[in-house]
Image (cartoon, rainbow, N blue to C red; front, side, top):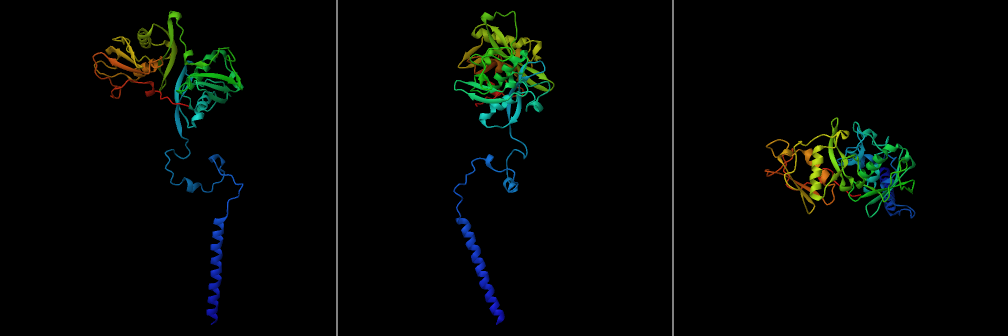
Length: 363
């Protein structure tokens, strides 16, 4: 009888315990969050010092970017090569928000900055050490206003144009940027601080880059044209832009540019000669709806009897010609050749644009 009494007593106690548990569980669900609690709007507001939950949150993550490695994107940076020429290098930079990419690119032009461990052999950054990009402001007319810190003025006079050229060409890789204006610590610069280069309404690609001096050219009857020449530094291949003055009007201008490309820019650029010296045009160039049609003699072919145009030859021509106003693409033909192909055997079935070599993007 005593055992039966103990059994009933135990069941009653257990019932009260379970009832208390269920009641406590229900009350936790019904508790409202404090009225003054602020919701987390961004990852930056999360306390990242705690390790709790890390394993469960990363488990099963199928991201293609390896753990510990930041996602990168290729960007064109205009740096100084071993010959002191301003030339572009495509480097993989950490992926940033769209509004930050231009500032990031400029910051990678600073000596001693984040670009240092990434520099190819023979290349160096161009902006004075310690320079900071304080702000960027892109106007509707394509003018980008760059505010730099006081360290920007710590350069040699002979480097002034190189600094302007490197900054301008780095920024105008973005298709909605046309020109650059400068401020230093918020104060607009009408001239550069060391050698007084005028900035006026802004500095653009029309001001030229690596300008070649030529005493035999009549500057009154000629126009500045930026031509691209392939160059090599060790195992690294790149293109050097050189602004040269070329005489002529329209079709004659196109023919003269081709002649200049075949002749090359001279020894100072360390350019690689990729044209057969006999290369020439077989017909007068024509421009129709933005497409420049160029018909060459067979001397342009990589090998006699084979319809192959060397990749560097094609890129040299297209990069150069699409810098010209109204030229959006280039259609290259060769006399007595039905279908041209590249070095990989792929046919050139459509006019070639510069996007094939240097994809453009907007800020």
